[in-house]
Amino acid sequence: MPPVMSIDNTEYQVRLKWMLHGQQCFNVLNFISRGSQDLINNLLVPVVNCVVTHLLPVLSHDVDFLGADVRNVTGTVAQEAEQPAGSTHLGTESTDSLPSTNAMVIALKTAHVGKTGRGRLFVPGIPESHQASSVVDATFIAAAVAFIACMASAFINGDPPATPFFDWAVRSRKDNTAYPVTQAIARPIIATLRSRKVH
Image (cartoon, rainbow, N blue to C red; front, side, top):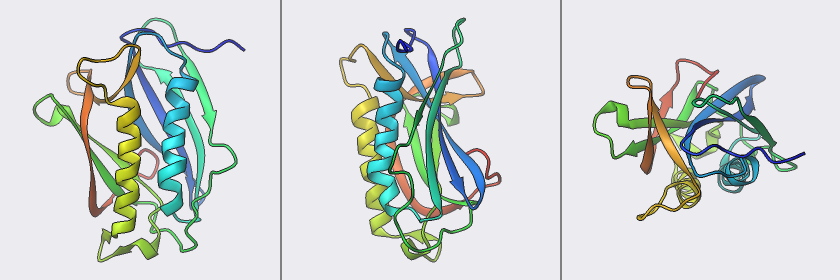
C-alpha cells in the first residue's frame, strides 16, 4: 500500500488512543505539515515511540495504549492513517491507577499571546504509587519531561525552520488557527477532568 503523504501547510489532528478502567480515552494533538511527508513514518510512528518509550514505563498496569490515528482538519482532500502501539502497549507499574478522571497536565505554550496560544495535554493512568497529596512524584515528572524532550526533538522546529517538518501545534477554537508549540511544561499537581472521553 502506498504511503499517505501529507499536504504542505495543512493541519493534522492525531489521537492517542487508550483503554483505562474499561473506557476508551483520547489525547488529541495538533500538527502543521511543512512540506510533504509520510503520515505514518514521519508523524504517527515518532509520536507512538515517544509514548511507549517514556510514558508507559511509569503508567499503571490498568492502562492499555492502543496506538494513534491521524486525519487532516484543513485542506480539500480527506486523509487518514493509523498506527497500532505494537507489542509494548501496557503500563508497567504494578499498582492501580488513580480514577480515569485524574491526569497529569503538560502545559503547551506558543509564541502567540493570550489563551489562544496555550494548550494542555493530559497524561492518564497515574499509579497510586507515584503520587501523594494530589501531586505526582519526581519519577513520574522525569518521565513526562523525557516524553516532552522526545516530542520536542521530533516536532518543535528550529531557527531557521527545517522543511519538510511536522510542527507540534496548539489549535485555537477561537480564531480557528494552529500555532506551533515553542515550549511544553510538566505540571506536578494532578488535574481533575470533566470528561473521560477526550484528553
